[in-house]
Length: 337
Image (cartoon, rainbow, N blue to C red; front, top):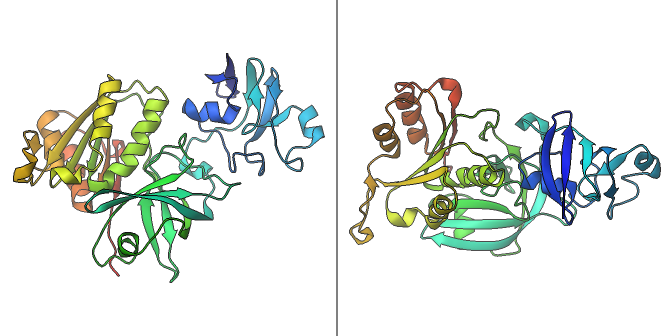
C-alpha cells in the first residue's frame, strides 16, 4: 500500500510506501527535505503534519516533545504515513541551504576497480548522516592541516556509505596512503559538503555530461539522482579516457542506457591500446561532442575532469551557442606531497 504525500508550500507530490518514512520516500522521489541524522536524534527534519495521520516511529523524546506533537509537528526521518498526508517544510533547493559539517568516518570498504582507481566506501557514525546535493564534494582533512577534495560518487538517496573514486597520483600525499598503506576500518575526518556542481532541476533543457577519468564520480551521482527522481530530460554522457581500462565502470552507464530511453552513453578514448580492440570513438572528449552537436544553444552542459578539458569545452561550446550560465564545471586539480 502507498499514500500520497503533498509538500507545502511547493505543492510537490509523491507516493510513499507504507514501510517508508516520509524522508526516505521524499529522497527516493528526488525531493530534498532537510535532514541530519536520519534516526530521530537531531531534529533537523522536523516539520508539520497539516493533514492526515502518521506513525511517529522511534525517536529521542528530547527532540520531539508531546506539546510539539499536539501542535502537528513530526520528525520526517522516523514518521511513516498511515493515510494520505499534507506536510509543511522547507525544501532544500540550493547548496547554501545545506549546513557544512566536520565529521569522522570509517573506511568500510576499499575496492580497486582499475590499475589506478580505488573506490572508498565511508561509513558515518551511527547517529549521523550527511545531507548533500548530487555532484558535490567533501574535503578529507589530513593530520598536518592539509585537505584533499573528492567528489561524492553516490546520490543522496543512497547514502548508507559515502563513495569516493580516487585515482592514484604517484607522490600524492593522500593517494599514496590510499594505495599503499590504508586499510579497511581506518578512521578519517572530512568537511562538507562543498561545491556548486549539481543538476539545475528548474530547467527542462536536455543535458550533456562531459567527464574525464574520475570526473565520472560526480556525474555518476547526478545521473543516479536524476534517474531515481524520474527525470524525463534527455541526457547523454561523454566519458573520455586514455585507454579502455581507464573507463573503470563502463558497464554502469551501459546499464543506464539499457534501462532508460532518455539516457545515452558515448565513451571516447584518446590513446586506445592494441589489446583494447577499440572500434568506438577516439580523440578528445570535447571534440566528440562538437562532432555530434552543431548547435548547443538549447542545452545544459556539465563538465568534470582535468582543468584543460574543462576550459577547452568552455571555449569550444560557447562558439557553438552554449551560454555561459548553462555551462557547469568542476575542474579536478592534483596536489603532490
